[in-house]
Amino acid sequence: MPKRALNPAGLPPPPKFSRGVEVSGAGRTVYIAGAAPLNPDGSVAGVGDMRGQAAACYGKIAQIVEEAGGTMDDIVFLTMYVTDLSRLDEVQPVRDQYFKGPVYPAMSGFEVAALAGSDWLIEVDGVAFIEG
Image (tube, rainbow, N blue to C red; front, top):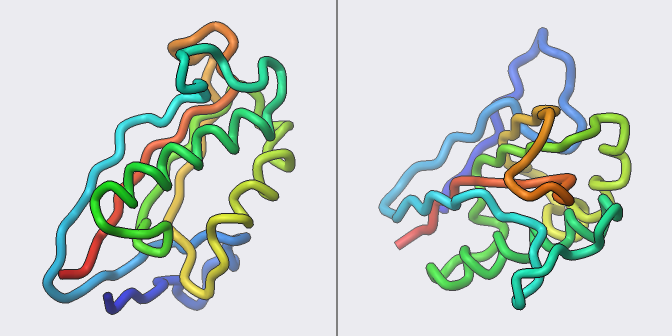
């Protein structure tokens, strides 16, 4: 799939995300609901462990994209919700496992007072564009 990062001159360079991503060609758009930090049995993955919860969320996103016939390279947009922005450095190593560049997904991140589960520290949703 032709995919191009949109990082206009004059804007600060983004750290491992794109300001925008342009995709073209025939394909399918997959909208991914909030991936929660839950184990298959419904229990919370890594209570208190931001990195462990991020791994659970991004792992779910990978499974959903693969179910649609794509890969994490097909992700074009992510939204990340965290309960404590000061812990974002714990999330980056997990993201680095899934996104190698050179075109990173466009991304927004928000600190929220609470998520749907009282022990959740992070939730991630996204959009993928799968060629074909």
